[in-house]
Amino acid sequence: MAVTIKDVAREARVSVASVSRALNGHTSVTDQTRLRIMRVAEELRYIPHGAARSLITRRTQTIGALLPDLHGEFFSELIRGVDLAARARGLHLLVSSSHGDASEAAAALRAMQGRVDGLLVMSPHVDASFLRDHLPVGLPIVLLNTPIKGQHYAALNIDNFGGAYAMVRHLVARGHRRIALIAGPENNFDAAERLRGYRSAMEKFAPGSPVQVLPGDFTEESGYRAGKQLLELKVRPQAVFGANDIMAAGCLFALREAGVRVPQDIALAGFDDIPIAHFVSPPLTTVRVRIADLGARALGRLVAVIEDAATERDQMQMVDTELVVRQSCGTS
Image 1 (cartoon, rainbow, N blue to C red):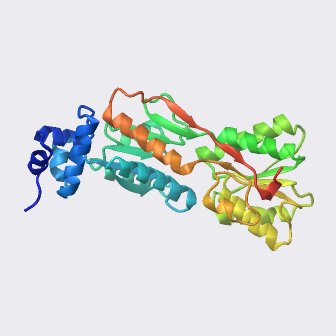
Image 2 (image 1 turned 135 degrees about the horizontal axis):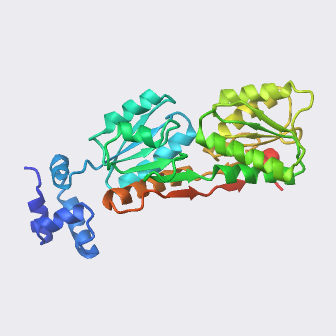
């Protein structure tokens, strides 16, 4: 016969209500009692009935995440951070992607209704009216990397402007004045902020120097195309700043294919510090975003909103970045 919550209560010498509160994370149970209950539940191999728990708590114990894409190291690291934090809290994760399409984003949001207790949303199509149109009122939401402000939504944004600004300042300090940027896709908040940081830093630290922006879309292929385009210029840049690491890696391949040395002939830098940045040759100077930590922090904030409706929602928190200097633009 299956072990019931009554069996756990009897063995732990507590009430059924105490077992329920302990298993659902209520703070009214002392740490000592909670540990005893959890130990007994593990020894008895008690498995809570998910449907019954949902009826009692009116929760699914599931968190939804809508991302613009699932491909690439950035998103895999982000999902890993969210998932680890969710599992530590006994929660499950339901993930979907908009693939850069507004209608797919809307369909994904509608499909998650009734299935999740809250949502993490990263999408270039999100604004206040979009959320109102496609989500029920009161559903806890945390936005990631979005320009929405003051709309009663909690938000976490990477300091894209500050990171790009710091990178250009570093490149100028190393003696470079002709610095090209491989930009991210249009209508992308991260890309726009990194472009703004690049322009602002060029104006501040290299006044009069050319501002050179090449099109990109955050893919390795677009970085490769940008590298080939740079090779055709009569006057090449002294340094190239990819708005993400994967584009910088694509550019590196194009430069090496043409026999251009990095960093001796052209310095190269990226943004994000995805794992591959350590292993390309030469290792890539970049702006570090602790991506898994970003996911874990977003999950923690969403849980806080779910558990306490009074939690401040219309507050944007900034996630700091860090300059990481490696061999691709010199090490000093």
